[in-house]
Length: 222
Image (cartoon, rainbow, N blue to C red):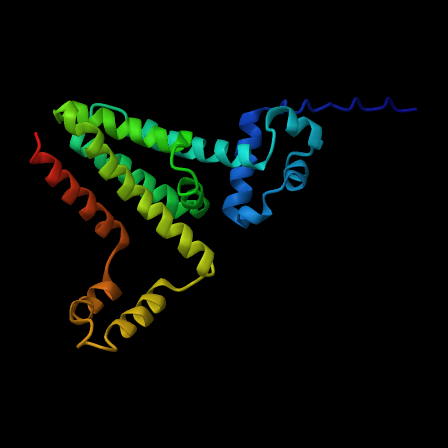
């Protein structure tokens, strides 16, 4: 009888909070927040619910952990020898791009003002304002203006995600909105003039223009 071939056993990577968060982000990105359940996680990670509950108590804690994770990456990428003003722009655009890539992050950031992910953004921007030479008396107001602007974007994206299908054609949607703006030029003359800019504008460039306007205002208190 031929000798039986020895089967090589494959040792699975032990379950960790980091693996759970990574799997949760994958589900959120591909299927949305409603699809993130502990049952879905157990299937994806090939483990039992008890093993997941050992690391994460509930869905709320898991959503907080996933948001913390992606925002922490933004803050890490912004750290370096960059000039403070440019670092602020990098942080802001990093959050913008993160929300664009992970729409559920906008929902999470707008759900609780003082969650740890928001504090990360506040701390990062506040540190850069101090390095920029903004007087301490004006640092909190300046940081608040920037963070509230960024979180306004988060809320806008969160609302859009709830109202519009994920595959909505942006150009067609904006064309329809701009057409409504031109419906009553006597009542809304400014909006009528801005309709073409709405239809053709670039969201990222407009967002950064707002950051630059706030920074210009901050320069007046230095």
